[in-house]
Length: 150
Image (cartoon, rainbow, N blue to C red; front, side, top):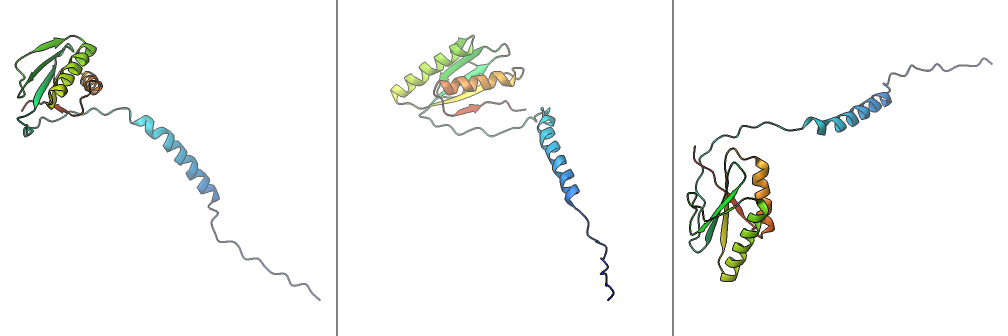
């Protein structure tokens, strides 16, 4: 009897295993390089007019001004006052201890105090953030930023 050989049909399917390997390597490369690309973005912020925040008449307002030379001035009153200077501090720790004393005195009298920061346009962002950190250490929960109309 003659042996009948079955002919194999050619395989018409694509082998995708090498493509999966290449895609995984590319994925790892992009995952490693993507965080390195986002170093920083230069942004020119627009000048925007905004509405004034509502104020409660029963609260005190502490306005802290940061000058270009990173000195701190503050005024405690019944409204936001950017023209007067009640006291001055040359460093951030001095400002933090003074605000802590003001906040403790207000709490002992049963008054609430709103705190606003007004920074000079030439002072760097880090100085404003350092002031906000100092206010957080002093026990201030909410801080408002004061801007000027364009």
